[in-house]
Length: 340
Image (cartoon, rainbow, N blue to C red):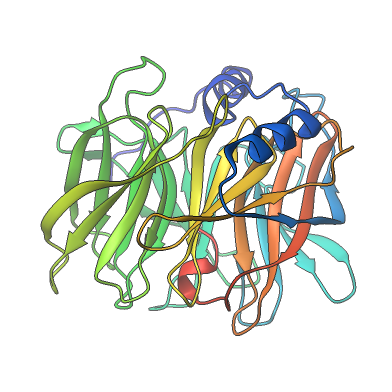
């Protein structure tokens, strides 16, 4: 399939600052005050687990995303802005609190990660090249799963989700840099040969996850602070779509989405180191907050909940570096709360 030339990493870092992270500048303390003023749900206090990265001199930032558990129990995380030579994909041993590099290269800008239920490989979205690539479970053996245009336009793939058969669903943030609603939700067949647009004219779709019963997709739109629901039939075709939740985020914007075993949604926030938790009917159940005196962290992008357990690991980033924070989720982790 057609390949596209790489964008300069410096330009991508600018995009990452202005677009992917939502330009969050408030301290965590200010964010906590905003949460308490809404009176929505209870507060879940997250605790620092470990620091994974520091700000890179080459790109001027670090941004952790896509936490996902492998079958070996390792927690895989991507650093969106890592330069060549630094870990772009890393594996955390959560029992020993150790970290090792899984993959680096001089080309990709990876914004999400998830293991396919079909072939067991680790899939990554390459934001700057419009590609989906995959790695062997332990890293290496890099392959291009999908590349090229979809309905005449290259994607800017952000987050990904798999159905049980291994077909891939992508939030395409196309149009974001121009501040135009050209975003899409795209379905790619499990062999990577067919791409279908399921929804279009979206305002920078970001988070994407199947619901508890695999009957539909939740997806967030970054520049509208809303979560929509896309109902699908048994063949992956759309039967209906509606706005489901309007997120009261203040200066923060909606990022990635995870779903637990009770069907609750964990909505990451750009520009504020916190997550909003909703039930499937849209009721705000809780806000996950960092300790009140935490400084230098601006965004909580995503979360992975231990499969079969309630220990949650949240990726948090800012000028102080990239961290994992932990909290007790409201229900157990399942495939839908494992990266993407």
